[in-house]
Image (cartoon, rainbow, N blue to C red; front, side):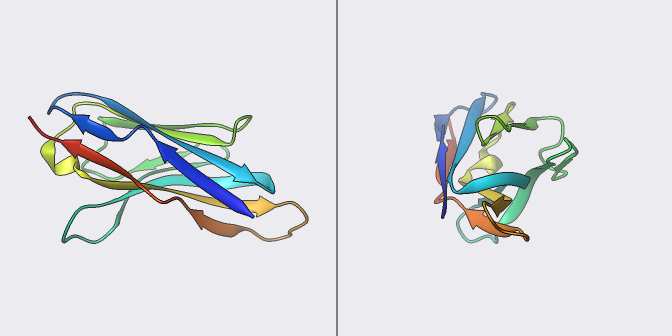
Length: 121
């Protein structure tokens, strides 16, 4: 059993910064991929950023240069540092991991509940 808990969302002014955290807990052995998705009202969910266990990162074009994803494997935590925030960044941000649980030979996907990020003056 795996649980993901996001934190750090809230209200921020345009141009401001916010740091999201996602803590994975439960019967985890190794986390392969970690990522952040977001969904704004009336829009489809989109991948914001992802990071592989080896450290390779991938970003959506509209956040590249402003957002930074990182991970702390000792704490089973992934972060999303968001800077130069724009109103169009407003969305529910959800954490996702692909991981091996203890005793498993294949990975499974897990999702957090999401945290609201609102960028407004």
